[in-house]
Image 1: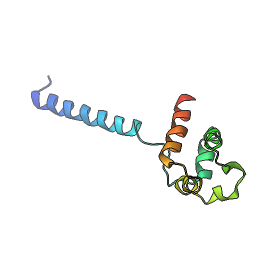
Image 2: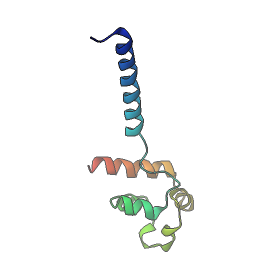
Image 3: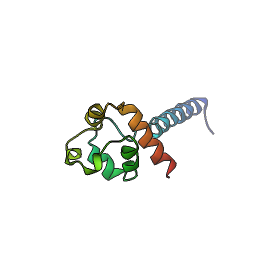
Image 4: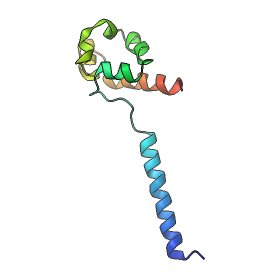
Length: 94
């Protein structure tokens, strides 16, 4: 038999699991502190987004040492817009 105490404990456990699942699910895949080369290596489809934002990253050796934030700053682009575009493309290509 399940006691009230065990039922309450089980309910709390389920809530914690749900919250953790939501947090993991909504976790960003890409951050502005990631190297551009790291993003391209991990998500090859991101090349299209860099091209769409007119960032000549693919032909520049600087991507090995340049973060998304720095690259965006050099091109006058909001890094959050770029990141959102890359993440949307990744989600839609699955």
